[in-house]
Figure 1 (cartoon, rainbow, N blue to C red):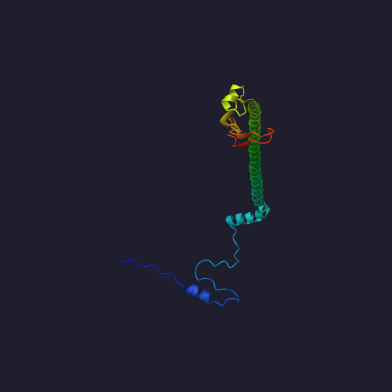
Figure 2: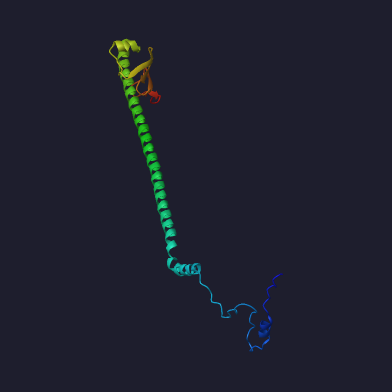
Length: 210
């Protein structure tokens, strides 16, 4: 014999309650369960929201802190520019000073060379003036001019820094060319029968310093 099936709870009582008249403005109660809470919902404040709020509140206090970084960058840029400008100034000044010193040194060398050449011309011209005197004396005695070997035999010499490179003589004229070995200056001179003074004919010099 089978057991009777369980009886469903009757909904008649609930239907009667719903059908009862309700005061004006009252909401219908849910058919089952607890009545819903009709109080206004309070906004929940999470820990994350509180942290964000506290962060936002503290943010204005630290707003001026990042301004120091651009200031330091500007100071570093200014210092770097000043150091670079100073290096450039020192470099340009060094080049100018080196150029001036080089110019002065070249001018001094050139001047020294020019003075040495002038001294050589003066010395060789003095030797040729002595040759003129010897030739004049020889011409009075022998009615002609002497060759260079004949002048050397009479004691005529030239300084150690000079060499006779060419010489000839005849009854009416003589010629001699002397070279300064230290500078390369070569001076030549001729003499004629009717010369009255050693200054009538000036030596002709050529060549440059070695």
